[in-house]
Every structure is written in C-alpha cells, then in structure tokens.
Image (cartoon, rainbow, N blue to C red; front, side):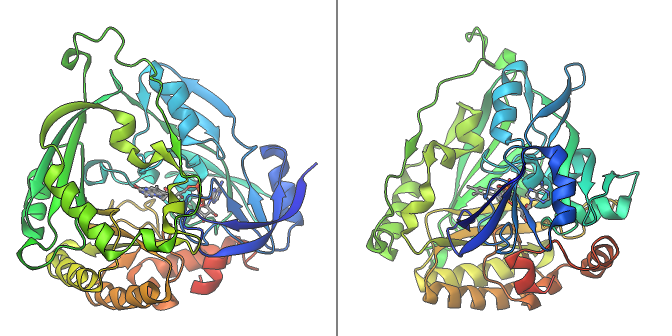
Length: 447
Ligand SMILES: Cc1cc2nc3c(=O)[nH]c(=O)nc-3n(C[C@H](O)[C@H](O)[C@H](O)COP(=O)(O)OP(=O)(O)OC[C@H]3O[C@@H](n4cnc5c(N)ncnc54)[C@H](O)[C@@H]3O)c2cc1C
C-alpha cells in the first residue's frame, strides 16, 4: 500500500518551499505501478539538490523505502543497490571493509538515485570524471510502468539522458557500480595558500596528478588579492603511511552538532563574512597532514541542518562552470562583481574539472565541462537574485553553464550552455511523450 499525503517540501536551500502531494511507496516493487497510475510526478531522493529539481506539487515520489543493498562482491567491490540507498549507509557498511565510492559529492546524505540523476562530481573529477562514468547499469521505470535496463551497452541513449537527467526520463530503481579499494580511512592532505586567482589556478594546474583537489576561495577579497584561495589536495593514505595505527580502517565515532534555529538575517552580512574569510585565509594551517576522510570529503556534514544559518528565507547556491580557455577572464569578472556586491558567503569553492568523456553514454545534461567551476551560497534575497542574473550574463558570455542540481532560479535561456540539449529532448519525447515526469524546475526551464 502506498502512503499519500500533502506536505510542504523544499530542497536543501529551503527556497522555494512548495506544497506537494507526496507518494511514499512501500518498496521498489510498488514503484512501476505507482508511476503508471500517476498523472504527473518526480522522484525525490534525499532532498540535497538545493532548489526545486525534486519537487512536483502534483506528485513527489519518495524513495526512502527503496533502499536495500541487493548484492556485493567482496572480491571486486561491485555493489548493486536500490536507488534510495543513502551514500552515508554505503560508507557505514563498506568503508570498514576497505571500500569507498569512486566519486562522491561534498555531502554523504544523498541517495544513489540522486547521484545518478545529477551525475555528481567530486574532488577527483579531473581524473575520474563524474559518477555516471562508473556505473555498470541502472534499471529505469518509465512513464508507462515498464522497467528498462540501461547501460553504456544497452539502451545507451536513454542511459546517457538519465545520467544527469534530473529524474526527467523516469525513476531509477536499482544501479550497479564498483567501489574503490582503500587501505585506511585517512587522507594524506596537503594544504596550500594561493594569494590570488592566478596563483590558485597555477596550483590547480600543477596538482593534476593528485587524486583529489579543491579550493576554498575568498569571494570578498578584491584588488591584487582577488580570488585568493586555500587549496587542499589529497590521496588515500595507505596502511604503510600509518604503521602506528592498529586498525586504520575501523569506524570512528564522530560528533555532530545541529543548528537549533533559523539564524536572524543580520547574522550573515558582508562584515561577518569578510571577517570570517580574512581569518580563515590567514589562520588555515598549511602543510601536509593525515586527516580522516569524513572531514576531508564531508566537512559540512558534521553540522546538521547548517542551511538554517541562512535564516528563514533560505539560500540558493550559484554553481557555474566555464570552459578552460575562458575560465581566467570569466572568473575574474564573476569574482569582481561578487566582491563589489559584498554578498557572497563563506562557503565558496573553486575546482578544476577534467575533460568530459567523449563516450556516447556520457550524460547529455551532465554539468561538468573541462574548465573551472565556482560555487557560492547566497541568502535568498531579492538583491541576491538580481545579482545572480548579472552573473548569468557573464557565464553565458563565456560559454559556461549552471548546475541544475544547485539551481532554484535560472531562466530557460541558461540551458543554451548544454550543447546536447536537443538529444536529451529527443529521448524524453520518445520515452515520456506526455511529459509525466516533471519537476517545478523542469517546468520553469521548459525542459
Ligand atoms: C552540502 C552539499 C554538498 C554538495 N556537494 C556536491 C558536490 O560536491 N558535487 C555534486 O555534484 N553535487 C553536490 N551536491 C548536490 C547533490 O549531490 C545533488 O543534488 C544530488 O542529486 C542530491 O541527491 P539526493 O538523493 O538528495 O537527490 P534529490 O535532491 O532528492 O533529487 C535531485 C534530483 O535527482 C532526481 N532523483 C532522485 N532520485 C531519483 C531516482 N531514484 N530516479 C530518478 N531521479 C531521481 C530528482 O528528481 C532530482 O531531479 C551537494 C549538495 C549539498 C547539500
């Protein structure tokens, strides 16, 4: 029996919040018939997309009870699981056995279905590509309730439209991919300071051989210090790196804190963020050290509901990518504009993406593009929404695009940055001619 209810839902940014008819199937077996019976719906994984990609007022399909591990091969690391499985649960179960996901986003509170639908990238994108590149297959429930196995070899075009397709081709039921063997739960991390955007980009270029790299960027510094950053790069530590630790893969107890209330809007202003950024830049310890992989990959997960720091009006994240040749000039303009507005937050990230895979199964609406990606959080105010439109013009003029998983506000013109959009639309027209799968985002964008 499927649960049905009306509830106010939002993505991680808590902007927008929509009243949705929620459908809560008992398990994966119930999903195809539920889809066939519905007039309009979208899959909801764990709500970590920032905006309205997983929201449909007419039907939002929860996948929390579709979360079983189906098979695991301890020799190869091959994992087959239902799409509602949380990455946090995969880590809890398989990390102590020496396995880690091939690609991970900056939070572990995402589902496997959400990772596929957004074709997520991690700090290793320059070498490993996005999550879809590591998938062996997925099972997709279509609008008429049929279930189709899709892979780089089978139903290739539907596979390519589903990886990064934001739930618009169907509901992913199951997926299979290989975990990476790791010897410890530690990362050998090196932290470096870069006094300007040029210095940060030079550090990224010289860090190409490192498995993981990412930079925190001070979005409020200007002049010669425009784009000053703290770059961290890392490798999985081997057992030989930690000879004194008897069980370097054993689980550790980690404290989490919860933000108890919405912060007042005054708490996050240009002065507090500027002061925080200056301190963070100066005080951050540079050099090499071993750190647990949870704070390395998921620094914000220790502070549950940190999105409440942005106050009751919520936040939106602005994440763009610019092609390599246009990155320096475009980033400079973006950072200039943001620094002048004084509106950025302390959570600003710069990352170098590697080349996109030229494979026919590569995600048609996947976000990554070889070049630099910049991600910043903004409080959801009218002034910041207007600022985002100015940033859109810079991104478009430099041939870049915005990440759908972070979007809550862009207009349809920004989809021009996705060069395989026509191929995506053709698949959608073939598998879902009546547009049953729709989100508030897809309607806003005319996707
Ligand atoms: C703190 C934080 C850090 C993040 N860091 C990164 C990062 O480093 N890299 C990155 O790429 N992303 C990052 N993200 C974004 C996040 O990884 C994606 O938005 C991801 O899709 C969220 O997964 P979810 O399970 O919560 O999906 P939801 O937010 O519930 O849904 C996201 C999209 O996936 C679709 N979907 C979900 N499940 C299914 C399914 N079973 N079948 C079909 N479609 C489905 C939904 O319809 C929706 O379009 C971050 C988000 C947060 C909050």
